[in-house]
Image 1 (cartoon, rainbow, N blue to C red):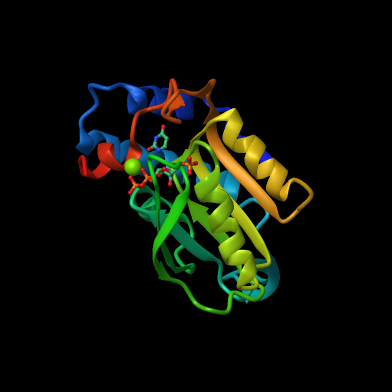
Image 2 (cartoon, rainbow, N blue to C red; image 1 turned 135 degrees about the vertical axis):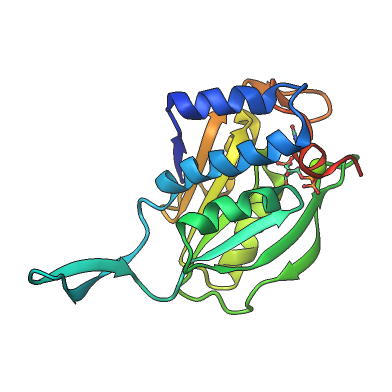
Length: 211
Ligand SMILES: O=P(O)(O)OC[C@H]1O[C@H](OP(=O)(O)OP(=O)(O)O)[C@H](O)[C@@H]1O
Ligand SMILES: O=c1cc[nH]c(=O)[nH]1
Ligand SMILES: [Mg+2]
C-alpha cells in the first residue's frame, strides 16, 4: 500500500476553513470540490496511458492518451458524493459507479446498502472517493468489494485519515502495490466515538444535513 499525503499550502488553507465549525454547508461543499481537484492531480499520477499519433498544425508527433478501459470513479455515499464533480472534472472520460455504505455507529462496522457498479471490473483502475478514513472499516470493505470484481488497481482519495484507519488498511492491504491512498492530511487520532480528531465532524452531515 502506498500513502501520499498532500503537502501544499493551498490544501492546508482550504482544509482549515473546511474544519472550522462556523463554515456553512454551501462553503463546505465548494471547498470539498476544490480540495478534490487538487488531490485528483496527485491521485492520477500513476494512471495508465498509451502513445497516440497526432498531427499538430506544424508536424506529426507521438503524444499520450489514457489507456482503455476507462478508469472507474466510485463515490462512497453519502459523503463521497461531494467529491464526485471535482474528480470527474479532471477525469472526464471516467465512468462512475456508486457504493452506498454507512458506518453503524454502535458497532462501527460498515454496512453496504446500495451498489450500482459493473459486475466485472477486470483491468479497471478504480478511484474510491470518501472524505473520511476513520477506523478504516468502510474503506477496507470497499477495497475488497472492487478487487473481488477484478479491479486492477485501487486509489482511494480521502480528505482526512486517522492513524488507526491507515493502520487497518495497511494490515489488510499492506503487501499490495496496487493500493494507494491519497489524503489531504493525517490527523492525530480517533475519539471515543471513533470520530477523527481534530477532524471536521460528520462529513455527510456537513455536506447534506443531519440524518
Ligand atoms: O472509517 P470508518 O470508521 O468506516 O468511517 C468512515 C465512514 O464514515 C462516514 O460515512 P457515514 O457512515 O457517516 O455515512 P454518510 O456518508 O452517509 O454520512 C465517512 O464518509 C466514511 O464512509
Ligand atoms: O470523523 C468522522 C468519522 C467518521 N465519519 C465522519 O464523517 N467523520
Ligand atoms: Mg456521516
